[in-house]
Image (cartoon, rainbow, N blue to C red; front, side, top):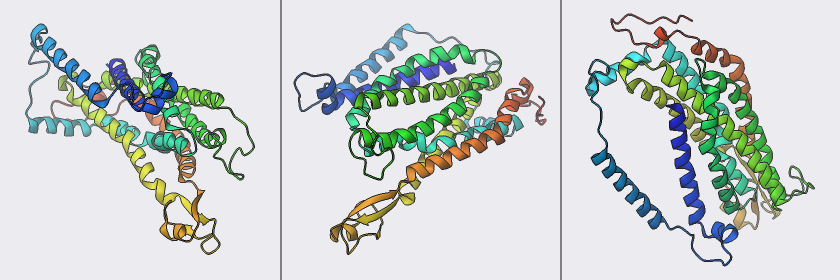
Length: 355
C-alpha cells in the first residue's frame, strides 16, 4: 500500500510540475521552441478541461464496469461518527501509538528550512525561475520510479530500517542545499565581493549538475523514508478498525511534516537582518524590510547582512543531530514491538509495550 500511494503522489506531483513548466512562456521558449511566443504550450483552461474529461470518463467506467465486493460485516463493522471518534481515541491511548507519534511529530523538524525555502533562495540568489522549473520537472519524473526501486529495500518485517539510514542522508542533503544557494549567486553573477565562494568560477551546466545531484539525493532519502513509513503503518494497523487506524497515523505524520515548513517560513523574515547601504545619511541603519521606506527615501538600498535561511539551516541540522542521538533508539524500539501492542483492546484493558 505504501508503494502504490508513493507512486500515485509522485505521479501527481510530476504532472503538476510538468504543467507549470509547459504553462510558462519563458521555459517553453528557452527549452522547447525555436521561435519564442508570448504564451506557454499548455494553457490553464486546456489543462483543467483535459483532466475534467478524464475524471468524467473514469467515473463512468467505474460506475458501469466495476462492481464492489460485499464486505463481511465481521471483518469491518460499520461505525457511526461518534463511535469512529471513540475508536480514534482508543488508538491514541495505546502506548505504542504515542511512542510513534513522538517520532512522527518531531523527526522532520530537522528538515524545515531545507524543504521550505531552498528553491526560493536559489531563485533569490540568481538562478532564473524557469531554469529551476525545468530541472524540477525533469527530476520530478525520478519520483515516479524511485518508489518501485525502494520497494525491495522496505520489504520484510522491519521496514523502518530504510527510514533509519535515510534520515541522516536527508540531513546531509540539507547542508548541500546550503552550499547550492551561494553557488547560485556565483554562477549567475549576483555575488558580491565579500560573499561566499567569491572568485569561484562555475558554469551554468556545472551548477545544474550540482542541483540535479543534490535533488536526486534528497528524493532518494525522502522516498525511502516515506515508503518505509507507509509500509510500517500498513503492517501495524489493526485490521479490525479498517482504514481508520492507518488514516490516523497518516494524519499525525502529515502534521509532523508540515509544521516545520510553516515555522521556517514564518520566522524567515523576522530572523533576517538587513542594513541600509549606499547613502551616508542613512548608511548603516537597520532596515525593517527589503523595501524599508526610510532607507529608500534617503537614497539607500537595503542589503541583507544576515540571511535567516543559513541560520535556520544550521539550527535545523543541530536539531537533527540531537534527534538522532535522543530518538533513533526509540524508532528501533517501536519497530520491535509485538503485534499485540498495536491492537486496540476489546475489553478495555490497557495495552502493554512488550518488545
